[in-house]
Length: 79
Figure 1: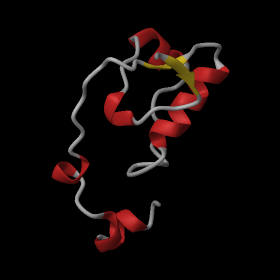
Figure 2 (figure 1 turned 120 degrees about the horizontal axis):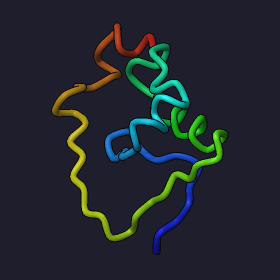
Figure 3 (figure 1 turned 30 degrees about the vertical axis):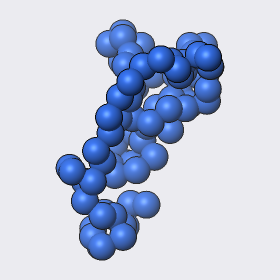
């Protein structure tokens, strides 16, 4: 069942460009983690919905591009 949520993972975000620009995009203060949550909360505050589509099939291979945050001191500083 589709649901309206407070936030979804950034790896699965799809948003219109005008909405992205309206809310100020992703916050650069959160370069590694939490920028997706911050963005979704800004979208919600602007009066839009974050919708989880139950029948979408996605594959998220986070470690393929990010690596292990706990082993990378520079990335860990932003968590």
